[in-house]
Amino acid sequence: MRQLPCLVASLLAVLTPLALAQTPLPLSVSVALRQAQVPAEAVGLWVQAIDEEQPRLQWQAQTPLNPASLVKLLTSFAALERLGPAWTWATPVWLQGRLDERGGLDGDVHIKGNGDPQMTQERLRQLLRRLQQAQPGLRELREIRGNFVLDRSAFAPTESSPADFDGEPWRPANVQTDALVLNYKTLVYSIRPDPARQLAWITAEPPLDPPASVPLTAGACGDWRSGLKLQWQAGARPRFAGSYPGACSELQWTLADPEPASYTARLLLSTWRELGGQISGGVIDGPAPTAPPSLIIQSPPLAELLRDINKNSNNLMAQQLLLSLARPADGSAATAAAAAQWLSQWFEARAGLEPPARLSNGSGLARDTRLSAQQLARLLLLAWRSPLMPEFVASLPLAGVDGTLNRQPARFGGAQGRAHLKTGSLRDVVALAGYVQSSSDKRYLLVAIVNHAQAAVARPALDALVRWVAQDAPAVQSGPHKP
Image 1 (tube, rainbow, N blue to C red):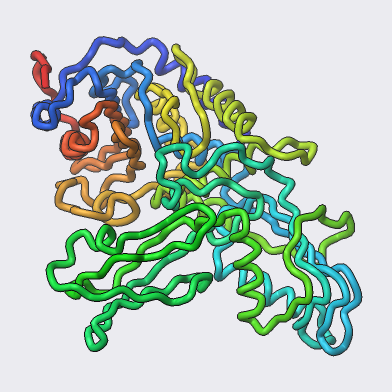
Image 2 (image 1 turned 180 degrees about the horizontal axis):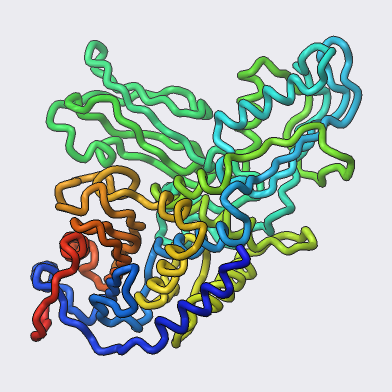
């Protein structure tokens, strides 16, 4: 880790004097932009061979643009640099009271959340199983004659609402942070057709809602989600008032729970009872004990969780990571504003340039974030020349293979399976950044950002850029670019 400050300084020395004259756009990129009716002025691009000092392509490279989920690249490398790839989140648990020989606890169970972004339902089961077996030589804990007491003080309560960003609070991408967030506060609804009864059965996992059914209808599968006529309202349980096409097989729909404030308590109690446990009290908030914990649950290592964050572009996990990363050393609560400021300062020390970057959070789910293609290129070059490079690159989607790039592999041509690229997508934004191995096995870094009302239909231009880089970024002739 001590090598990084010197490495940053050397990279700044290399990249600062670069000539900023625009280089011509590849013809295939220009044509795709023209077809999407996106002007070249709405695009920021940077392509550079890893072993070269000058870029092969720079276009609007210093223009501040909204990079959407490319912000996760900053959060990820900052975490690797500060914490290391083997770092884990610790969730301590205390048994407070007397455990009798019959498996009963006269007291409470305390759980302190420290921001673990991947406390899934399965890992919650593991925690509770370890809790049941916490006292060797005695019967398994089966009855709590008290409460589950949760300490969530590691993160300050969020002041935002899941509906604030796009008015769609049912989207898992909009779930808010919590020091003790369980199972991403989501439900996976499975819709299974039953032709014999002319029904489709709807079940939730975790099973926090009772099974439901809707009638089957004729016709193609099509837009089956709209046909279900989801009735989702904050504070009320989801309902499905429509129908399901009989041509569909069993499908799944992941939704944010409409009662996020009580989700953790409901899932905790449901899972405890599923494991045969009883409790006379309930779930309350309270401070954790100061005594050593009875047991500690460790998360998977950071390098492993980064693959979930970046390959699936998980906003909640990225936000949880940044809050954990920027938590004050005195143990006080991390706040969203302070975390964004910390990331801005960290990035400024590495990317520099004017105007300075503007960051709102660690996920990129924001309208006011601004970065330039050149700034992101600096970060990618720094990461590539770092000893942390293998963990960082492995966290990115592999073109045409997995994560957010697993669809339509043919669109990447010779880059299929040879490019690790993070995607970014918001209304009016599409973006792509990462590394491409060309047909000659030369390595390139690539940054592409489009900010325009037609951005969604400009993805073929980004795909064309990736294919061009995979062909070793052949020289293009100068000429007008007026898509």
